Length: 93
Image (cartoon, rainbow, N blue to C red; front, side, top):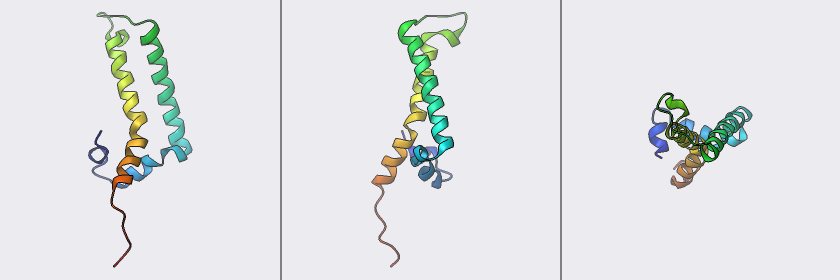
């Protein structure tokens, strides 16, 4: 995932995303995303079904939702990895 590309317009948001685990509202959102992902995962693992009539019930659609949830949940770690790879600044010269 290219975190710099996602937050290209405002690079300062990378710092915010990296610290999402320390912000109550961000933690709540991540918790909700994780809960929804786990719900969909349980459905796909215990009752996968093909549904040409309603694609939102199809296991492939649900697998796509799980993948999207996983990407959202990985944003804080990706942001931290990106920031840790930046060269350290040694202050003004």
